[in-house]
Image (cartoon, rainbow, N blue to C red; front, side, top):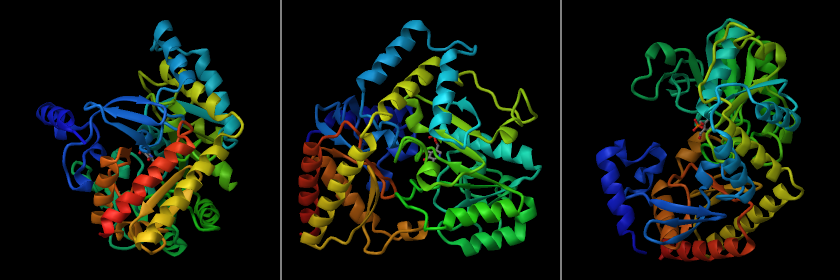
Length: 430
Ligand code: PLP
C-alpha cells in the first residue's frame, strides 16, 4: 500500500499543528508510531485516503457516524442549514423539535440543554449536581473517559477511599482532591468510598455501558446498587451516554437497561457528525441552570441550527424499523467470524460485543474492568492494527477502542473484513 502522501502531509502537519493531530488519539502513538493515515473522503462505510487507498471504516469518527459517512438524509439537512444560516444566536424552532425528540426517546429527560461537545455536557452535569446538592466531590470509575475538563482528568488514588491525583499536567491538585475513582463492576470499593466521603459527594458519574476501555457491560445489579447507595447518601447519579446514546437502541443505555439516572450527558451520535453535546434530567434538578437557577452555563454555538438539523436528521434515520437489528446482525457476523479465525490460528483473543459495537482484546481473560483491559497485549494489537490497515480496514489506533459497525456497512463488507482478519491472524502467529 502506497502511503507517501499521508506521510508528506503528516510531516507538514507536525510543523504547524501540535503533534500533527487535533486530538491525541488520532496519532498512531499507541500502535507503534508512524504517520496516521490522512483521509480525504468518506462515503457510506468507506474512506479513501490522500494516496487513493480505499478502506472499510470501523472508526466511525469514534462513534458519531452510525449512519455511515455522508448519509444523504443528513447531508440534505446540513445543506438546508448552510442555505438558511448556520448560526443565529437566537432561539430556533428546530431546538424545540430536537429537545422533544430526545425526551421522547429517553424518558428520564424532563428538560434538556444543548452544548457543543460531550466534554461540555459532562462538565456541566457535574456543575448542576454540585449546585443542586451543595456538595463538591464526585465519584467516577477507573478507565471511563468523560472528556477533557479538569474534573475528569483525575487518576485514582492508592485505594478506594483515597482522593485522586491529576491525570494531566495543568489539572490543579486541589481539583483532583474533589474526585474519587473506583473500579467498574465492583460494588465493594464503591461502597467503601461512599462510607468515607458520602456526605460530601455531589454526584456519581458513570458510563452505564463502558465504551472507553472497550465495550464493557455492567454486571447484573451493579447500576441498581449504584443508584440505591448514591441516593441513600443524598447524591445524584449522572450517566455519561456520550457513546451509548442511540448506539444500541433508539434511546439510551438507560432505556436498554431499564434504569434511570438523575442527569444524563450526551454527544456524538446526536449531532449526526456535527459538533454537539446535550445534557438533561429531572426538571427540579435542571431548573438550577441559568436563566432559571444559579448554575451558569452558556455557549455562542450552543443549539446552532446546523448541528441541530443534522441531529434531527440522524435520529430520523435511526428511528426507522430494523436499524438496530441490522447493526446487531452485522456485529454478530463479525464476532463469530473473528472468533472462528482466532480459533483456527490459536490467537488469544476475547471479544466483548453489544449489537453493532465490539472490542477485540488480545487476552484469553474475560474483560469486565479497566485493569483487565490494561493487561491485554498492546503489542499484538498494534501489529494486528497495522496488518488490517494494510488490507484496507480502518480501525481505531488503540487497544481500548471499539469497532463501530454502521448501517452503511453491508454483509459483503463484513465478509471482506473477516477475510482480512483471517490473513492478519495467520500473519500474527507465523
Ligand atoms: N464522554 C464519553 C463517554 C466519551 O467517550 C467522550 C469522547 O470520546 C466524551 C465524553 C467527550 O466527548 P467530546 O469528545 O465530544 O468532548
